[in-house]
Image 1 (cartoon, one colour):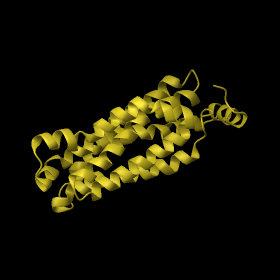
Image 2 (cartoon, helix red, strand yellow):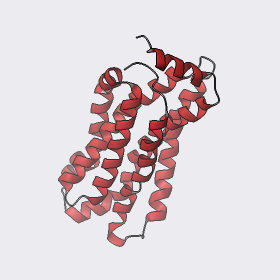
Image 3 (cartoon, one colour):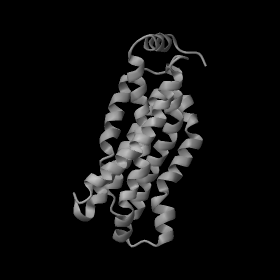
Image 4 (cartoon, helix red, strand yellow):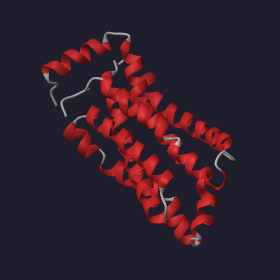
Length: 206
């Protein structure tokens, strides 16, 4: 695939500037939300089971694993929009999915709407696992590709760590609604990521 003239010029200037690290960090923030979302649900496990009185099978297969089902779908089909519409556009809409999922899950009033919002967040995670590493590898130089690409993986692990810490510090904040705060707080990095991703250049003609 050939770069458009303006994209090629922009990409060349990025590779030759000190902005490369910052731009890669913004794209890699999708990995942070990936890790955070994967683990933050642990704080909501028992509260939502007691709240909605679901069976163990329904709770495990339908509620707790719904984001993982979405991740599978997103990972399988994420290459299609990434190729068709461009990496930057897809990264932006991933941020929208993350934000909607966080707020929707936190405000859900029944297990079905909760599972729906968790699912679309999972789709965002799956697509991000395709789009973000692709974007970083395309804007990086041969000498920096390994280091910059590893930031996505590092942010996944860092997001997992922060999710555990977040759940710990938010426990007791809202009484029986602690889990809503635990899930809703993910909207903060998601919205920041969505705003910041608009400042980065496209890596290729989508």
